[in-house]
Amino acid sequence: MKKIKVNLTVNGKEFTLEVGPKERLLDTLRERLKLTGVKEGCGIGECGACTVILNGEAVNSCLVLTGQLDGSEVITVEGLEVEGRLDPLQQAFIDHHAVQCGFCTPGMLMSARALLDKNPHPNREEIKRAIEGNLCRCTGYQQIIEAIESVAGKGEEEGADYFEWDPD
Amino acid sequence: MKESAARSGNRQGTSGGDFKDCFRPEDYFTASKYFAPESLKEAVEILEGYGGDLKVLAGGTDLLVEYYERLYEVKGWLDLKNIPGLKEIKVFEDRIEIGPLVTHTELEKSENIKEYYPVLNRAAADVGSPQIRNRGTIGGNIITASPAGDLLAPLMAYDAEFKLVSTRGERIVPVGQFFTGPKRTIISSNEILSRIIIPLPGERTYGSWCKVGKRKALIISSITLALVVKFNKERVIKDIRACLGAVAPTPVEIKEVRKRARGKRIEDLNFSELGELVAERISPIDDIRGTAEYRRDVAREIMINALEEIAEKAAE
Image 1 (tube, rainbow over the protein chains, first blue to last red):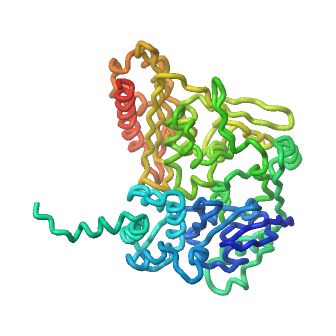
Image 2: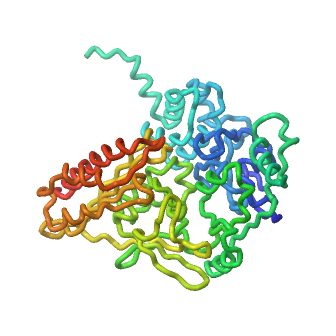
Image 3: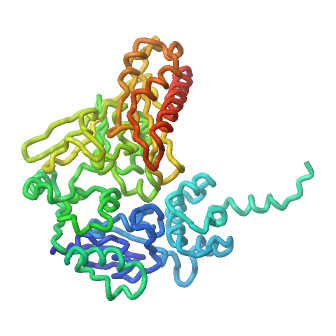
């Protein structure tokens, strides 16, 4: 039995953990740090429910060993809210009815956040590509894409066009 | 006893209910070792000492899927992450060397890979999902050696070579000799893949990439095709590589295409005939991702499309 010492920043807080060699980041977050917003769906990188942002990149936390992460920074869905204020993406998901059963939502939000952090004004194709690793079994993709678009500063205008009277 | 405990620790612990009763972090620790050496020399010494007992760990996106529900079988990890140089893409006069820990996302974003090996670049962009591409590596894709590994046909089409190191020295193996079967390669249990070496393709080289799967994202390929064609100044084909994935036990090159096409202009080739040739020479199987018959049909069509695409690019 060997433990690995890992310094990890999670949602801005620093932790020093001693983890086993086979502990997945998903388990560290859920079981040790009680961040149960991180969901386990498939456990094999297919569904994206466990998506977190690791050093600026979206990853499946079920496919990452915590022992590898000394010095890393992790953001989970719990880290999106700042001083009681929801992240604009979270508010947009509410406003656009992008949450149905809610199980995929934390992962969807993290994939979307990772995209917007790198590319604040993605087009629809870029949004679709950013969430291609996240499954929504309620199949509410349309609303999810619209929610992300609205934060990307593109959706509002397109939505308005729909209601405009076009005599031609 | 220990094994079943580890299993319940891994899985049931997160499947709801009062997991305090069944989640035992200590289950993860049973008889497992973790090494993260800071040099390749140290790494191969550790590997030599433990032989096949250690799993060499890069991004983990294949290993943690393969060992899902049987992590208890893994006796230990040799993590390559602290070894300097394994994450680099280096350009030399005649070649590019890619470190095994370069991720698919990095291959997708690298200007050098885009410029010199567009087929590899596009294949990397088609791997899994952003989450997988951010973590999964080129070295992992090679060592996993899935017949459907997306980077393998492109590496073959660009004549890549793999540098393998052990305590006894190093050897360089061409991609065509590396894969021996589904998930099997010639690498020994005491060797580490330390570099992927690809010759620079030179001017007037064009490529085409096609991945066919049941959906666009997060799909194991039903069939892949990497076609790379080199022309001389007179627009005559100097060399051509038609390489396919998921249609045989290993990635394959259809060498007869070379024999038929070399020395000719692309507009003088009979594309349907070459498509038919590719369909004949592959040895696909029926599986959940498609029947053999389907794969032959698709192979023919994507070969024709690829030739058309290259003819168009070369004409510009």
